[in-house]
Image 1 (cartoon, rainbow, N blue to C red):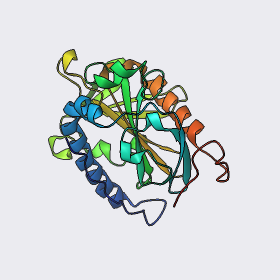
Image 2 (image 1 turned 60 degrees about the vertical axis):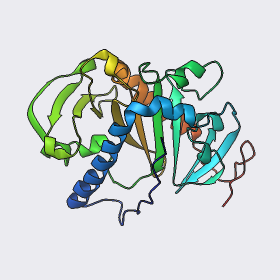
Image 3 (image 1 turned 120 degrees about the vertical axis):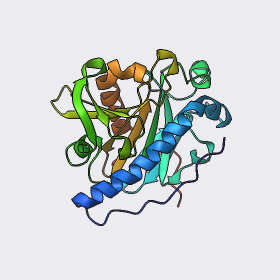
Amino acid sequence: MPLRPRRTRPRPESTTLPFRGLFIGAGLLACGCLAVALGASWYGGALRLAGQSEQRVPLDILIGDDHLRLPANMIRFEDQRRAGMAERVDLYLAWPELEGYSAALRSRFDAPDDQGRLIFVQLSQSTMSRDMSGRVEPIYRHLLEGPARPGPAGLTAQTLKKTSGFGEDVLLTGTDADGALYAVRCALPVAPGKTTNADCQRDVHVGRDLTMLYRFSSQLLPQWQAIDAGLRRFVSASLISDMSQNDSGDALRP
């Protein structure tokens, strides 16, 4: 199945978006999430056609003000496996190893739909001033209907209105080990056999000005704290603070 064309997203005019801007951004995000939901069922086939690589050569990738150094075998799409400036980079990682494609992990990458052991990560320049947890109060609370109820893995579940643009997604919230609000949207399957590696999605701000959007199976919800903390550590370790430190990776190219 062909990949979706990339779109150039405008930079926000200020670091703090007005309330109305948040709703506009949320609407655009909802459209993108609907496309993700429609495409979740063919992730397995798409992976087989994506041209996986076992090469671990580190690539220096510059997204806005953030400099990332990532091994090629973690980068999902072949045309993104190059050093230089990029609008975004898409990764796929085996869980819990947080490793890229390899001969030892081949079976995990070739049949991901019902395994629940891959995490898809997209790193791009931030276009909203708030991440998903930060949008709960100003945005999501206006899109909820019905009472809160106990959800999976100790989280609280709330139904999103049919008119919200988020399909059948449910908003799950909780408190992490540091006392911070955690929020994730999931299309909870009616049966365990219907799960995919894209049931749930969450976005957080990382680095200087990056948004990390990641998707994972609802089967992994019991590990939500470990996943969130692990991915944050992974990105932090992949960020290069000194732009002159290019000796261990491919040099940045304009």
